[in-house]
Length: 302
Ligand SMILES: [Zn+2]
Image (cartoon, rainbow, N blue to C red; front, top):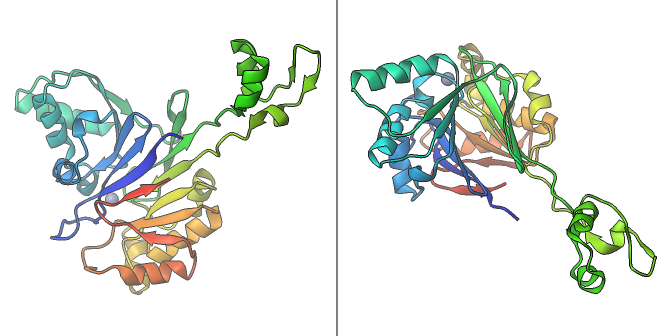
C-alpha cells in the first residue's frame, strides 16, 4: 500500500507563540508532497522536522489571512535559490497571484522554475491523476476560504499467485480480472472472480477545514473521510467569540465530525491563549469520541 501520511508543521491560530507556529501541513501520498497552507516560518519547520521542501509538488492555500500564507514567498524564494527546475503548482484564491508577482518583481527575482498558478473555484475537482483526486469546497469565514479533500481512487482487486502460476492468464485478461471479471481457464472451466482474487485495499481520504465557523454545509463534502482536520480555535467558554470571528470551538468541530461520520478528527488552529489545549480535547470527545489533538512535528497515518 502507498504511504498516505499527514505531518503537522504548524497548528497555531493568528499569532505565533513560543510553542505554536502558524498553520501548515505536509501531506505525503506516494511520490506526491502536498503542502497545505504555508504560515510564516513553514520552511524552518520543514527543516526542523526533516521534511524536504525540494520535494514539494503542489501547494494549496486555503485563504489569504496571513497566518495561512505569509511563509509562501520565503519558501518559493528558497526553492529558487536551491536551483529548482521542475514546475511547482500553486492552488490558491486568485488575488494571491498579483501579490506574489509584485513581491518577486520588487526583489528582481526571476524564478528558475515555472510557478503554475491555479485560481481556486468555489468548489469542485482541482486535481486528478491515476491514483488520487483533490477537491475544494467553501468554508464559512470572513473572506473567501477553501477546504480541501484528498481521496484515493478505488484500487484494483489483487490476483492470487496460485491462480496466475497455474493458469498463466495474458496481460489483457489479468487487467480484466483485476477489475472484477471472471476467467475461463484452458480446460473451459469458469473460475469466479472471487475465487481467483483478493479484495482491493480500502480507499483512504483526508479532509482539511481551516478556518471556518460552524457550518453544516461542510458535512456532505467531508462525509465518511478517514481523517478530518478541523479548526478548533476556541473552547466552550469562547463560543460566542468563535461565532463573531467566524471560527469554531472544539465541540463544534466534533459535531461536524460526528454528523459527517468520519473515522478520526484531528483538532488544530488553537488560539494562542491555550498553552495547554487538552481541555479542548475533553470538550470535543463529549461529541465525538475519536477526536485527537494535533501536535506539531507529529505524523499521522491516514
Ligand atoms: Zn482566517
